[in-house]
Amino acid sequence: MDTLTPHHRNSVESLFVEDEAAGIFRFSPKVYSDPELFDSEQQRIFGHCWLYAAHESEVPNAGDFLTRRVGGRPLLIVRGADGKVRLFHNSCRHRGTMVCRERSGTAKNFTCFYHYWTYDNAGRLIGVPEKESYGPGFAQSEMGLYEVRAEAYRGWLFACFSRETVPLVDYLAEARDYLDMILDQDEDGSVILPGAHEYSMRANWKMLMENTVDIYHLNSTHSRFMHDYLPRVLGLATPDPRTMNNGAMSPKGLGNGHAVIEYRKFSGVADAAKRKAWQAKFGAARADRMLDYTRTLVLFPNTLFIEQRRVIRTCFPLAPDHAEVTGYPLMPAVDDPAVRKQRLDIYLSFLGPAGFATPDDNEVMELIQKNCATLPEGAMIECSRGMGSSAPRPDDEAQMRAFWRRWRELIGESAA
Amino acid sequence: MPLPAEAAALRGEIETFLYEEAELLDSWRLEEWTALFTEDAISRIPALDDPTRDPDNSVFLVAEDLPRIQSRARQLLGDTAWAENPRSLTRRLITNVRVTATEGDIVRATANFHIQRCRMERISTYVGQYRYKLVRRGASFKIAERIVILAQDTLRPQGVMSIIV
Image 1 (cartoon, rainbow over the protein chains, first blue to last red):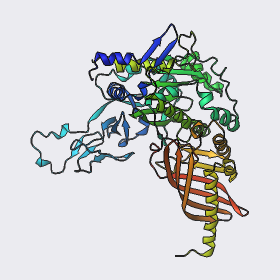
Image 2: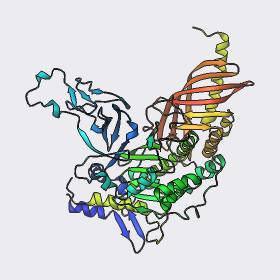
Image 3: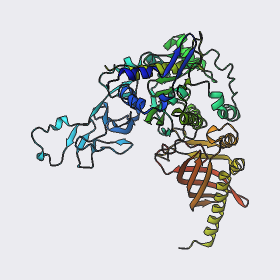
């Protein structure tokens, strides 16, 4: 880890104003625009935290592979002939060339086209043309692709670029229980369907972490979805913002910067048989909660799961004011075709580069970004909603404050 | 090789129809645009990596029936489609029009497009191919299928796609 001067630490603290008694939580817009903070994030967050990389269902069979940038690093994710999924830096051990240039496929071997060095699907170097030219110190068995530390939780594969970080299950903290509550609903397991949305925003990556768990903006930013699509296409009543959060759980931090909002489903009642079966399996209270509530989960730093729309969404920064967003549809592996169709419609109508909501969210975040670097000294972004409330609601901002407190801790902490 | 007169005339009719459609979109006459579709019309933009998948088992960028096509148009014409308020300036170049099949009153046609969009000092372009199933209705056509195949592997360069492509 880099060394932070006391000056830097103080300057990170000074980016925030937090006053519990007054109910105030604010931060400087520099958190979205400052290049030095961006560099710190690269090391202290993306070089340190567990990052969602892929789902095991994307590489179901031996030899199945995909290539993907995770934390800015081009990775090769491949299920070896031995059945194990491994993550590698997609870079030849000879001169560093990207070895695999396809998005996905199935392969026994990967050959770098620069000099035809060849690796098997467990990452071992198995072919070096004219190998006799190398000296006795050239140990081919040690020249496999650089492997990335990886762990899976119930099919979700995470990568970590630090050896020091705690194991994934500990890192997930209380978020694990929420993941269980979500994934237990897919009784035959979950799969990522093809067609991930890949788009971008000219805005800081952290804004999407906030925006995705912002219920407050639904009726304004997404007015057209709420007031045209819901009533006129789906025939559903537009939820009343004054009552739509009645009966919701309080949003909360789940440790390590993870957070959740949990609110009553807008529509739909589970069938009685399913409820009875789930009550027997999970206990009455938990089964009712799984069926009647829906959750949006922030897995710190940059992974989101919107249960209602069944999307795993990642957001990786390219620059302080530029981020790439990917939405992966996570669906039950076994699904009634009519229900699957409905799930896809719920997904697609709201989400994605051409959805009825995502472009408006992008617009909001890009408009924030335009101001970040130029506001007067001392200007603050407001994040106090519901602070000090005895019964915070999902349209408050406690979930965002949980994210920011962890961010502040990681960016500001002294060198290990 | 000159086209037989009849085929050339049909292609001319299709070109006229597609140019008129493009003009409606560029001039934001979206309600008139939705009137070009049949009752059972579909409008789709498949995933960029494989346009052949089933929209009931994979995610598209757009997969709409007429009520959704009409909703999209209404939303864009309303004042809360923030990503298009203020509206984009667009111009579409429609070229390489080809009739690929005819059967009774149905004509299948493809055309290439190049759309330039400018909004708030940013320019984006969308390039690809339209695949239409048109149904003859009197002197003109109705759109039964409008499939947009984008010639790009990701939308990251443009960010999002808030206009009708």
